[in-house]
Image 1 (cartoon, rainbow, N blue to C red):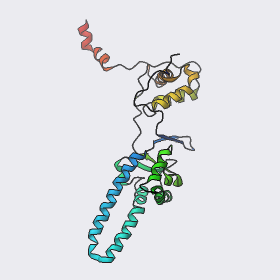
Image 2: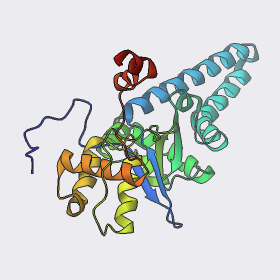
Image 3: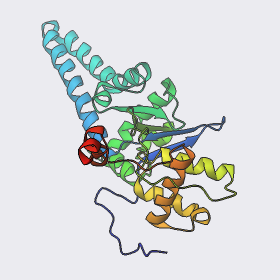
Image 4: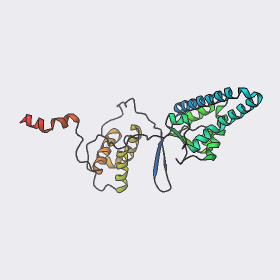
Amino acid sequence: MHDTSARTSPPEETDLDTLYQIETPEGIDLTAQVAGPVPRILAYSVDLFYRSLILLALGIALLVAGNTGIGLWLLCSFLLEWFYPVVFEVLRRGQTPGKQAFSLAVVNDNLTPIGWGPSIMRNLLRFADFLPFGYFTGILSMSCSRNFQRLGDYAAGTVVVYREPVAKTGELPDATPTPPPRGLQLADQQAIVSLTERSNVLSRARQRELADLLQPVTGLSGDDGLRRLHGIGRWLLGARKPKQSKATATTDTPEHAEAAQ
């Protein structure tokens, strides 16, 4: 067995990933990528900018109405502050204009579309996340939470995820197809195929963790075990030959073969 402890991981690899996974009562695995504090702050800034523009335009339009205009402006300001995100989240599949700009969406913690009750709950509790100033409590809560949930998310049972797919899963890892060992159980085959198909979705650290769980199958651990599982997975998916590089494919063309003769 090769010693992999001294190997350094590439800079893009992390020990943690931001995947949020649940299993439905029907046994279907659902996966989403949760959004951290930075994109959520940027999305909130965009929404704040839009609300400010609306209030500015209303203020200018209502100047001629005197005290009545001031009262209407204050009422509109209240409605925009508390119900602007609620209306968009419920009617626009969890996306305010700011969240849509950064491909974010609010969903229930079981990844179902958010409804009126949870949306109102999470937005009414924004005043608690704002304390003592500048959303300090909300940012602290998101930074300490595994799924980046602020207090309103905890109370409403919601998470903020990326609406776009986490990654393309059609490309299989570059590994030499390897026949599986004799007597490989069906459950182990399914697990290996799933790991191979999702190699572009899971972080390298998570893949190594899963590969270590299948060490009794491969007899290897770490990157060596992961490469072995990728090879078995490609074999189970029907691949029997290793991938050819473009340079190799070019030299195999009829023109090159004729020139070699």
